[in-house]
Length: 313
Image 1 (tube, rainbow, N blue to C red):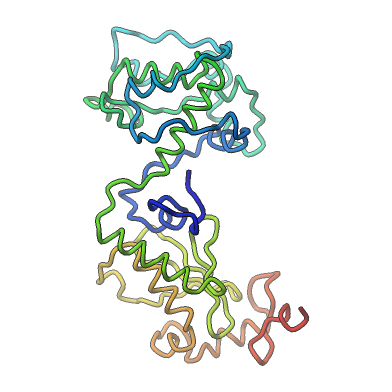
Image 2 (image 1 turned 90 degrees about the horizontal axis):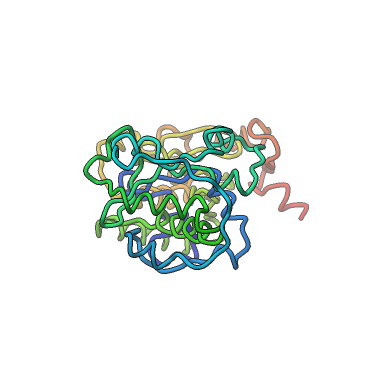
């Protein structure tokens, strides 16, 4: 699973996942089983093995004696793999209650049987690579026996603990960034070094975005966007600014952008003198912050550019 940025060992932290190239990120698992799995006791949610593949042999090695969960699997057509690719993973409780739709609701209460019934929409090939059912796009990479055995374990046919163990393995596999080029690895290392060098002024948020405390006293959010160039937003006045107007003309490794943006906004007063989207010396921005024109709940600033929380703390 994704770890905090200060525990990163193999580009597996929230920072690396937030700022790695989008085409190299594994598909996120937003289904309800992910949320439920994180809430499981540690003794049930143990990791087994370190392989990033799910072959038939790997699945056989992971299955251990357990008590059957009592979930009835739906009959799958052995002679029609094309059709089966569209329905595999569904079982009777899933079809009856449309659990996948229910699972996406924050207040949806799922029983253990309900949770086990959720389909992952995952497919495996002979080499153990994980893919997803996308209306036939997986033809040629799909192995019937491996995927069927995978889903039997997943849905509790061999017991609850084996289902939990398999889910844990899949969470770990989806937390690995594979195939990062050396330039991207270097850039993410530089990003970590930048964050580590300013622990009091650069905060890594839960989603991997950055909050930078500028020299002016203002706080700047460095947020990932659909492009490589990050979004920069002033927290006190809720204003988004572009500090690299011609950024689309420059191509850097993905991790370089947030690192360079964070360094720029640490020295935001100097940066404002070179960026026309900010006022010189941040005069306008600081005036708005002091007048409390901005985000409710954030401190206004006094004339010494100190937050009231610091003055009265």
